[in-house]
Amino acid sequence: SQQGEEDPQALSIQEGENATMNCSYKTSINNLQWYRQNSGRGLVHLILIRSNEREKHSGRLRVTLDTSKKSSSLLITASRAADTASYFCATAPIIFSGGYNKLIFGAGTRLAVHP
Amino acid sequence: EPEVTQTPSHQVTQMGQEVILRCVPISNHLYFYWYRQILGQKVEFLVSFYNNEISEKSEIFDDQFSVERPDGSNFTLKIRSTKLEDSAMYFCASSERLATGELFFGEGSRLTVL
Image 1 (cartoon, helix red, strand yellow):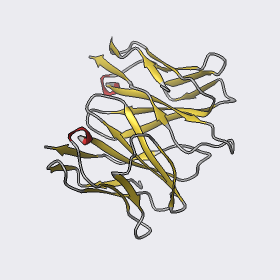
Image 2: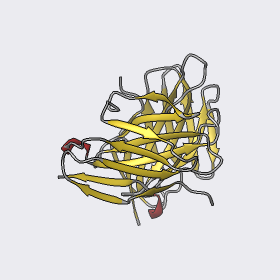
Image 3: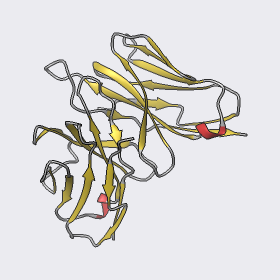
């Protein structure tokens, strides 16, 4: 089954604007994480939110998690051209022990921030 | 800053050939993963590895794939007989503790099967 489906698939904004990306998932999770990928490069962890948390901040990033709707959002405030990248949500499906042993990534949102 | 390193950065091979992709995870990490990303598409889970054995593998990780941690530092992915559809970017990742969850990714190995 699909996990971590992001929308929109692509987002184009001007510098200084806020960017909001959404993620939906299907199974119970231990946590949800957001990663960033510059073109052709590896993924870089941005932020992790646990299933018992509702909101988390890190610098210009704000993540929310609604486990009843199985959805999350990533907000980047005051965007910069350097924020141009693909952003992926990744979910950690719970296994029998209550832990997890993999992250499942979505297809990502391609963000373009224009100067 | 510690990092995950992968070699080679790019490998071109003929269909049917064996390929070994190598990864050196961060030294105190205990959990290791391989993912792949076909150009422009989603990042797909292949396999997770802990305590010298596979923890979980996906449907993609069939008998043509194997992983090994031969010497306590390297973590390898072997594809026995490559197919055209194996062309992708392969990412190695490691994490220190399962509960904290953050994965550290290498820069990837691009595999091109001709």
